[in-house]
Length: 124
Picture 1: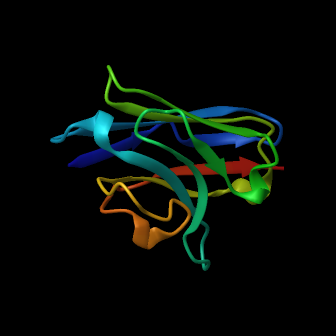
Picture 2: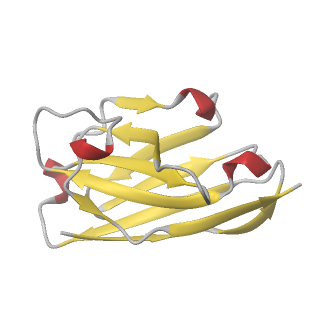
Picture 3: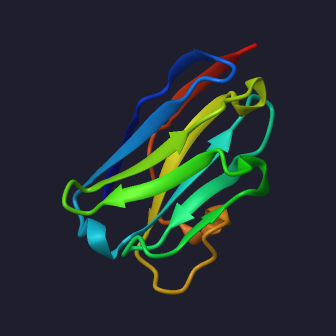
């Protein structure tokens, strides 16, 4: 499975961005998907996750209802809509996929495949 993120960029505080993660090489509709982020000098942390069907989502506390994860199984793509961006959201954002039926969606160890990341920079 290959995952390719896109949609990152440089924005101002309060702006919005939509990240995309295109998957190939597997049966996308069977994979749980997640978004993580890593700021310079910090550990990679969970941001959001969505079940294979899209029926279950979860978010990190820092999201504060600003981010929305979604997926389009017909397009083999998962999205992360980010609104009201803050300078603290500056990080590389990674999508991840898991083929497990039982996993901890909030932990890095719950995922089997990772993308290369897309940079999000929010200026104040």
